[in-house]
Image 1 (cartoon, rainbow, N blue to C red):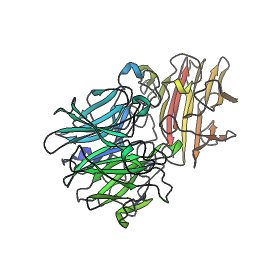
Image 2 (cartoon, rainbow, N blue to C red):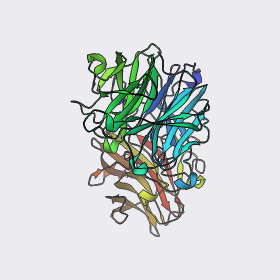
Image 3 (cartoon, rainbow, N blue to C red):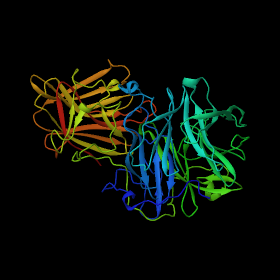
Image 4 (cartoon, one colour):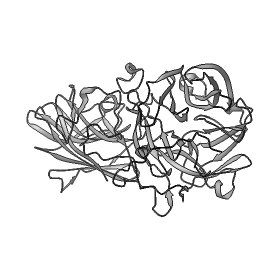
Length: 529
C-alpha cells in the first residue's frame, strides 16, 4: 500500500546530471550502492515519492536560500534542483547571521496536486510553503502556528479528510522536550483547529535513558498509524517507531535502527519511502562533525506490522544496524549524478549549491558586470572578513571526505582597502587570498581559531602579487585542510601547516568565497575535484 498519491512526471522533470561525477559517488556501477548516498550536510532529510520521482528537502538553518530541493529516481543518485525558500522570514530577523536559528527539520508531502513543505522556526513557529511542482514557484511562507520551541512538524491527510500535524519541542525555547504533540488543522492545512495534546511522552517509554524524542514523521499504512521518531541525541541516539490504531494513541514502541557494531553513530530522523513495485526504504542522517549531517539509505521489510530496517530487513532482527553497502532499489537504472559543486560562473545566476549566511541583498554580487566571472562586492567596511558575523560569505557544503577546491581570483582596479579569497568556515576559520593596500595586493593566509572570539586572528603575509592568483584548498580525511597558491595555475606552492576544519552551529563546515572592504573581486571559477 503506497503512502503517497501517484502522479505522472513529464520528461522535462526527469533528473538533471551534473555532467561529471562529484567527489563522492554512492552508485558503485554494479547494481550496488555505498552509504552515505549523500556525503554532504543535508540535515534532517525528508522525502516523498510522486510517480517515479523522489523529492527531498532538509534543514537549512540560517543559510539562504533555504529548504533545498533534491531529486532522484533511484534513491541513490541525487541532484540539487533548487530551493523552496529564497528568503528567510520574518525578513528583518535575518539581515545578519543567526547561527543555529531559522529552518529546522522540515517535512515534504504531496496532496491535492500540490507539494507541501511544513518547516519550523524555533523562535517564531510552524510555517507552510506549497508549490505545483518541487522546482517551484513556491508560495510565500504562511505561519500556521506561532510560538517558541515548536519544531519538526509533519502532516497527514487522513482517509476521513481530516488533516493532522505532529510536532516536537525544543527545550531551549519551550522549556520542555521529549514529547510529541498532535494538532488538527483546517481543510487547507493553514490553521490549527484543535490542539490534541501530547500523544507520545518519551519519559513514559520503557527504555532506560530514553531522551530527546524529536523529528517525528507521521504515516498511515494498513490501518495503522506510525510515528517514526529518533531519540537519544543526534550523535549517539537511535531510530524509534511508534504505532497505534488511533492517531491519538495509545502507541506501542520499538527501536528499529541503532549504531550497534557499525561506525554509523546515532542513525537519526529521515523518511520512509516505497517504490512503485512495493519495496520499502528509509533515508536518515548521521552526524559526522565537520562534514555535517550526511544522508544514508537503508532497506526496509515489514513483519507483523512493524518495519525491519537496515540489517534487520534481511536478518529479521527487530533492531537493525545501518548497512554500509547494499543492492540498489529495484528501479530503472539512472545516470550517476550528484549535487552540483563546481561553478564556472557562466550562467545568469548562481548555482543552487551556493548559500549566503543571511538574507542577501542585490548589490552583493554580479554575474553580468564581467561575463564569465563572479564579481563579489566588499560593500565597505574593513578589509578582511569578520566571518562569524558577516552575511556576505558565499559558501557551500563539504561534498566528500576528501576533495580539492581551486578558485581563480583577481582584485578590481579599486583594490585599495579590499580583501578577497577562498575560505573554510565553521567554528574555526581559515582563508587564503589577497589584501590590497596602497602598495598593491598582498597574498595572505588568515586563521581564526574560534570565530566567536573576534580577536583570535593570526595573519601570515606571503608575497606581493600582481594579476590573477589561483587559490587551492585540499581537504583530506578527517576534514584536515591544506592551502596552496599559484601564479600560473600550473605550479602550486603549499602554505606550511594544517588546518582542522570544524562544524558550525548545527551545520557542517563550509567552503566558499568572499570579498570585503571598499572594492570588488572577480572569481573566474570554483572547481571541485
